[in-house]
Image 1 (tube, rainbow, N blue to C red):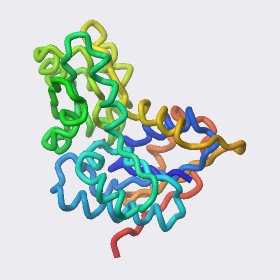
Image 2: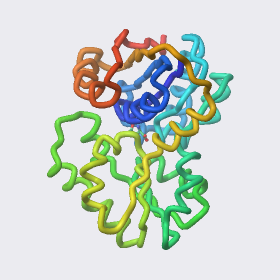
Image 3: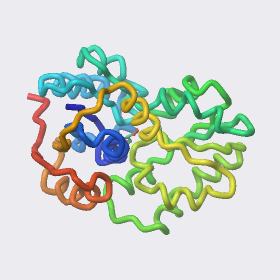
Image 4: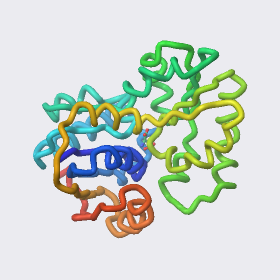
Length: 257
Ligand code: DGL
């Protein structure tokens, strides 16, 4: 079983990419909605809670842990590795390795949380000129659902204008919530930038690393937030992402006693 961690429903985009390439695997999706947004949380709190989730995933028998959350990957990858004590993947390194090669002008843009931008994790990993722009309001739109294309265009206007003005011709969707708006964002950036989804890049890597299986996989989702609200959001999102998934269990993870 592969465990994924995210601060909310954003990591379902990473689950979708993994499911597409490895549909015979079982997945445990862990969501810390009680503490969303991670993008504005103190670093020490993120590190403590990500380590707790990693230990929980290990106790649940996961064979690999994916920090789907960019913010957690930027701040707490080493904490997760120590607590999980097995194959642990962040979501930044794979997309960063190929981003510079996709840019004609050598300028890579990143849309991400305030915390991810502050750590400069993408700038350090990409190895080219990187412009990082925070878009917390756009991210919150994805978490709480119900946004239409006009809402996305309104909240994305300023961050995208900043990246365009900086000359970026590649934009990494450096927060798991943003691929939920991929179609709308693609239309807004089509004339000047190519979008890159870190979840897609990571899924390709895992498909190389993990052996194939024959049986059909399952998905189990747990949240620290309100299970009923989570179930409603999953009902909207899961059928779009992994058609054969079943939600085997929805419950508070009770990580903090
Ligand atoms: N899922 C987080 C990420 O990928 C962003 C949302 C948050 O602020 O918690 O960075």
